[in-house]
Image (cartoon, rainbow, N blue to C red):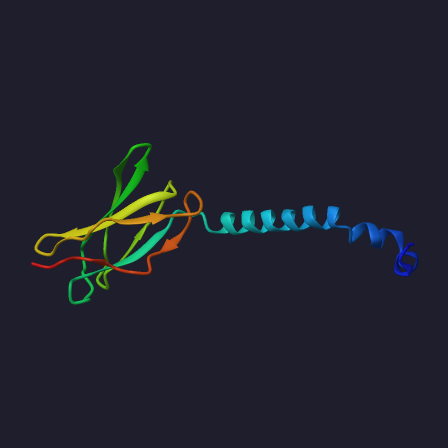
Length: 134
């Protein structure tokens, strides 16, 4: 026994609202949305701050970017933190990296692993790199 609504709806509407059409369309929209997001956020920027043990900004700290190379992490880039302790690393080519900071007299921070969803993803570190102090 056929549903009376099927006779009232146009044939194209029944076809379009079929789960065999809707599911691939929804998956396509999700994939295109992800690709658009990735293409707008793949500049390879890593932004963060360097602070001392008391939480004060550390200027002129040497911040290193370590990139995973099959079995080990290799040092790739160095930048210097600004007067407010903020640093920006540009051109990150990887999705599995670590950052660390050091300054003579204040020591070195532990390496902070950063696992990104895609290569060269832009990221702002939530927690600062902390130098232990003298």
